[in-house]
Amino acid sequence: MTDYEVLRVFCGPDGRYGNELGVVRDGAAVPERADRQLIAGELGFSETVFVDDPERGEIDIYTPTLRLPFAGHPCVGAAWLLGVDRLVTAAGVVGVRRADGLTLIEARPEWAPSRTLRPYGSAAEVEALEVPPPGEWIYAWAWQDEAAGTVRARGFPGRGDGIDEDEATGAAALSLTARLGRALTVTQGRGSQLLTGPRPGGLIEVGGRVVPGPAQRRGGVGSA
Image (cartoon, rainbow, N blue to C red; front, side, top):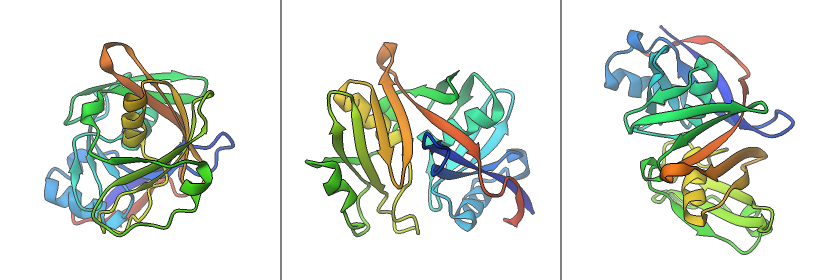
């Protein structure tokens, strides 16, 4: 039996929505990558994070079908839960800060997994999109108000692993911010919100609100 917690990351201003994240606090209880992958697949969240060292902020991230060196919403959620000032991922060290009820991380844009950033002419076009067939990770976006830096986005992982649409995608928002070179407020999915901005040294910051999920602790997954 492996216990895990559920968080909602990148909630809207009213605390609703957000992308659910599975967190296995006792990563030492599941030392093998194959077992971690099995658990992530059983849980079925877009990502599950295993905490290998809570004091140092060492984490390991999985989708239902693959391991990720870095991902945005697992890092923001883990930083909120652990209360650390940095995280150690397979990609590198991720900085953490907190401000005005937000948890924010900074990372290098090249760490973000590859996505197709596909612009549209209006927010309405993005909202009307059908889920595309598997095969390509598409981040569809449009300006809501270009002068204000507000963006409407939707994320379609295209992996064929049961996650047809990602509710909030930190790494994709990070990549978009790097491309546009300016701070953004992104509304994604049903109403999740991500805040981003360039930082010194070529880093990009992304963050938002985190709350406990509908069930903070459940057990009974995996063979570990």
